[in-house]
Length: 431
Image (cartoon, rainbow, N blue to C red):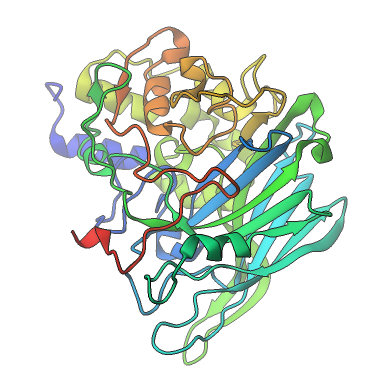
């Protein structure tokens, strides 16, 4: 610890930076990427977006896969009220195709809840997928999610249940899916929140403990032809949002009324988590990506950089971080630049071919198909972000990381690619 600053002062600094939460975190309540990242959304798990991903589909490279996850820290054994999508929320995937950071195409998922047999309940939810484009709304798919992976007696042959639930639309050229999956995000959250315990060493360092191992999320996803997007300069901007009715009245019967309002959003990973100060996190979730200029100072003078210097004396540049502005808000020239308009969206250059041997550090390792050019399920965004904040793009290359290099589950080889959730019967979190 740096001489002259107290532990209490450091905690205060880290809370302001969003690196340490102001609330206590217990099992199933970890925060990272965008898990429980803001005070209000932490009280609304079914609307809490954890991550969004956008990548050229590895087995169908003429398509792009876009998916978002909600409901952080799902313990598969947590019954009888198993986790589910909210029937009163709108879950959206938004795509900008012309660089103005306004959505040209929106895929909206809406769910219903059914009452199932016995005490297990029915976790299979009917849902619709609506495409909003050119001022028109069209229901493109209807289906039912697979049930949660409860156990071998309730949900035998779980993989086949998932396969049967994948929907096709646009004459079979596009696909949609929604349901419980393994959380593909990986990080040593316990160490990170203990005063930013980071590791310095080789790029393949290990020894970290993946907090998210065994936990699940709920995924909603689409796979669509690249040609159908007709993207300007072959680059799209992607983000996800969740909307709820403006007024909720609780009592003997809960009622929802008023217009739909945005309660959560996410583009790039870790933005609201470590860039936006705690006092502005709820405001950030309610604003739109094209309003990001009001938060520019937080990108140019990141509190995390100051915290790292206080703790580890690494000489990280603390001001004038135009490199972070480029990576997160405009795109990087000759990679995925979309213009001067500042916006936190996940930018993906669709002309870059699928990498046959993906590197977990993405662009930092010379693999231009990885984050911050889109985001694949295996991209190690914690290590990438730590090294970027340390000044990688300014020539200060410090091999930082959390010691966790991959998810504990193997990814699926086909859409939706996210691994099956572990079963409640296996109860891996109780071992």
